[in-house]
Figure (cartoon, rainbow, N blue to C red):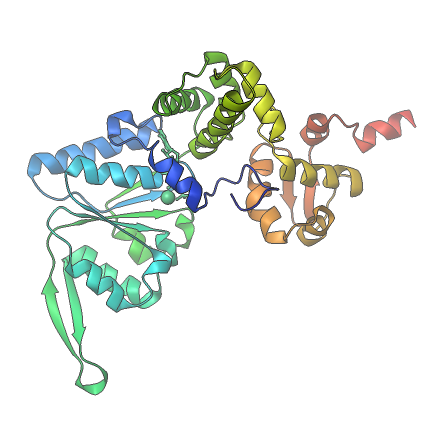
Length: 340
Ligand SMILES: Nc1ncnc2c1ncn2[C@@H]1O[C@H](COP(=O)(O)OP(=O)(O)OP(=O)(O)O)[C@@H](O)[C@H]1O
Ligand SMILES: [Mg+2]
């Protein structure tokens, strides 16, 4: 979570990532939803296992919190290889990548998170490693430096990105399989939730699960986060059981409404409708009105508001839709004119 205002940010902080580790499905069969990607991946992995060889490199793309890291771990587990974890920003220099590559064993999975953020020289070394299973290890410095070519064992790169469009084409082309993760349906989120509740040692009432699923923005990370708050509420203030009453109470405490909007989303929407007559208004003006950075409004609140059809982005600025007024229980300016 970025900050308190954005309770439903789909990004996770360190603490949350630790809590999530316990809820991650370990095998493809336990992975809920994403049936297209799951079936495709199952085929790729089964074929590789049958041949006794490493599968093609896999690229996973999609918004935060939908299961990219989880799938990378599952791929390593299914292949019975070791998982090496790194990320675009973590490998700054080609030497860093060379060190990782030269330590890989046959059938290992190298997971590169945020792969769109690799530095250019690192990317170029990766091309060669992915295609020819070779890396040039540079020994020494300056004019006396020599490159020693090293042959690498067959390994699999699993790249994850929230911004597939930012990947340079040569890198994208080196992935034999790309899985696009989609937002989850409420029914799928109900399954995620009941599985998570079981792992947390609690039982989630079906009605409560349905309610939570509807407010989780199609995102398992958010579903699990809401579930933990309901569990907190049930333990401290409720009867201990994860029922509809505990769900309603916890969600109202954390200001998550029935459509899954949090306080930040609603204040953006309210400012747009009430202070700017529904727009169009520029991003920075809107951000000042809600006391947030433009970046927060644009990356945290706006994508969901647009996805829900509450806000549209036009060349002249942000505009509230009819659905926005309806959601806030406000009369549209036009309606007022009819009566006034
Ligand atoms: N299909 C699923 N079934 C059950 N739980 C899931 C599923 N997908 C994701 N989760 C849960 O949601 C949480 C977030 O998933 P994960 O970390 O894999 O997302 P991500 O796509 O890597 O996000 P980010 O882009 O922020 O790195 C984890 O706790 C994971 O257990
Ligand atoms: Mg991840």
